[in-house]
Image (cartoon, rainbow, N blue to C red; front, side, top):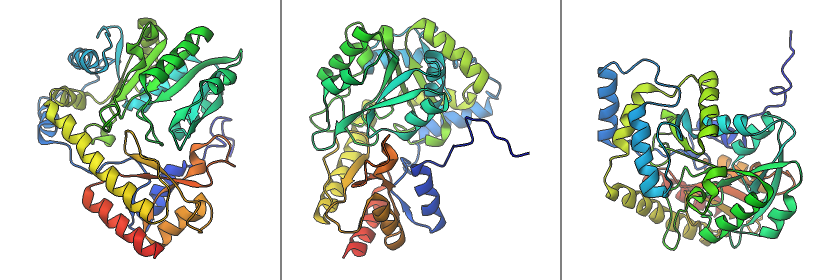
Length: 385
């Protein structure tokens, strides 16, 4: 028997995962996938050891342990300026992706339309399409990292039910301004749309830019699910712990869906993440400064080599224009860098709905340790000499 479900039969490995697999096979340096190899700090690791030692090994409540939800409520209030009730308006999730999966299943039906901003994070699109939801896209201007609100309004149809916002943005490095978020929120209100915001990079913003959560503005909490997590801030992508806040009736359904799909997030690691939320403010300052230093070095080096790189405003990704390298399109350049520099990047078409777009750009991630970044840049420089 070889029959597959309609959902699964057309699934293919994402461009990001594909780049990572090929890079690992040749022992290269992976600037494709958003993985940070900086160690988790000792107090958080110790808290995980302690939780395991204390046999915190059984299922947690399906919406996460209560003490973590209360700690998250305080973090969300102080940093995101959102008042969320820990027992009814916050859910700890199996990674931020797990929160997103539950959100999609709670809010939308097959045949609904959802707007993404392009270039987009491929998993946002793929999970929507897996559930029979039609994806509409609105372009992010890669030179100015801006959005045309008239294009957003034009994308809305009677079938549109929501929009997904990623800020700071993967893959462009865009940080949505308060003015942009208010404009998007007004469009959502006028058209009775839900908003899902992926804010996993919220602590990584650069001078002149500030993270703003749309759910903190005006009345937008009532139509917004704010998703974040521990992966990027604390360098623990493999721990698979995220969280989401939003209206009680939606969080309740998402928690029931999580119980069905994942049962619960990893219990001992939830206890460790209470410790993570209690780090000093200096931790976050140093985190942003470390990525700022790497951003400036990577952007300058790539520009000197003939790439054209808009300056990222946040997160740790950049979209590099390859038009003047003379090596072909995005897939050709990504293959060339992998074969000749042993450095992985991701072709730009991976982040577009229309696969005829993005052929002049590649995504590069600068999340790795500084010495690996420097080695990768040296290898790219030699390959392009």
